[in-house]
Length: 355
Image (cartoon, rainbow, N blue to C red; front, side, top):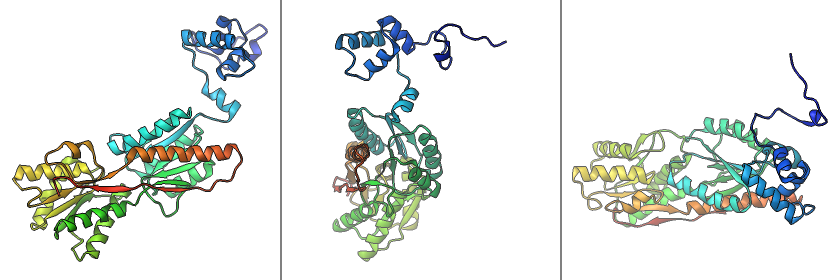
């Protein structure tokens, strides 16, 4: 038999609360004010005196009360968070990008809800669908390649979209990135200037890492332009290509093209694997084979010899992406027209001992 709560507040009690849970009514009772006053104090409403607000906040701290975000969403139509998707949280480049976003969003009072796509477009689609159910105020994506369903989802969400780490041909909104193809070509030109003429490339087996695929395209383009063979390519494994796979790629490269004199790698991790295997085999680096990576990871700066690589301002990408999202949100709050913008981030070849 289902009972019914009695008393004047029974009809306004709302959903059942777990026993022992701290509610706004608990804070109101301990502070000697109404629940409405507690709500206003938490919003820094000027109708609440400083003395009353301090008393309410003191109770909030003592009892560990956390305001109901769902109630806030219904009353303000603002969730207070943004969604951000990256291919990997283990990759220091993307971790730095997340840190850059956090700096800006924290200062703006917005929280981030992160998703790890694992370099999978289908997983990105699933995460977008799940995150949009939480009503984020903006969505930040990595790269410009998305499934058609994912593009429709974000387009229909009606929130600012920022794409990073790429320069997509058909952007969904704001863009903060660079041409990975140009970065791949830049490294080939650098190796050519260093006297290398038989250059190979180590990348991933699949196209899930579209940025890696574009670096490979840049390798081919630059090699052809310089009159060099552009087919010396070893696809070492599914992205992200590991150190161990980089080591295996050297064996495959030498077996097919024993005269190779330089190897450009899709990332610093795979480049370190190539370097370690060269050292194991007694191959002189850079005398016999020059090695170059991408990302300027910590391992590139600390290994011996240090890796030549391409550096990108990863944290800067995150900051600019967050600023773009805030700019779009500000324009929306003022009912102002704002055209999406593209911010190009510079990359640079970092010359070190391996090339």
